[in-house]
Image 1 (cartoon, rainbow, N blue to C red):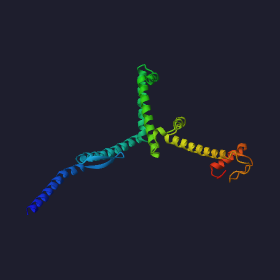
Image 2: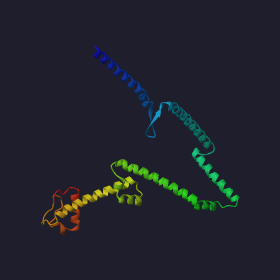
Image 3: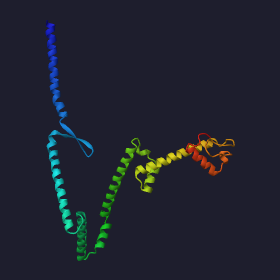
Image 4: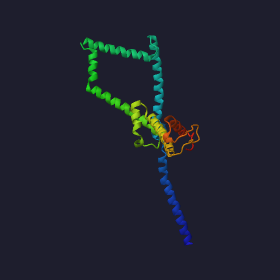
Length: 246
């Protein structure tokens, strides 16, 4: 009887411990799921529930701002058409030109030649440096985009495996990185097939006089004594699979 009581006590103790573990784990599970997943700029982001009202409010505000921007654009188009322009873009371009003319006129009134002043700005080191930095940033952006395009097509390709000929062709022809790589790869494949065909022909260089292969060209001499035109014809047939044996 004592063992049974002790056994019941043990079971109750284990059940109590299990309940304590469940109670301790519940808050953790709730904390782990206290967010929702959204896609933003093609990436998944985890947004906590308590921040949801802010994001919803921003979304509602964006709709209002977008609607108001469309209304302003329509108003600008109406103003542009009333003043003789086809669109508000054309009107804004005319405004920019008018501002430039006014600025040049101010230079003339101050005794400064606008062309000389612009030339001075063009040659200023800070202006040149800023343009160089802008050009480098644009080139890096283009290169990153082309690299992503190449490695998307060839996921297993490593940067160090790209032949130097690819970079040279890209520089000389102004091709994208993917186009240059495809052209060099196609050329290498053609050269490989041509080399294999030449090796097959060289293996038969000591053959006796007579017809060669199963193609349409009949040769009554050995390959080493064959005329250039016949050799090129036979080489083409081997590459195309028209000659299956030599």
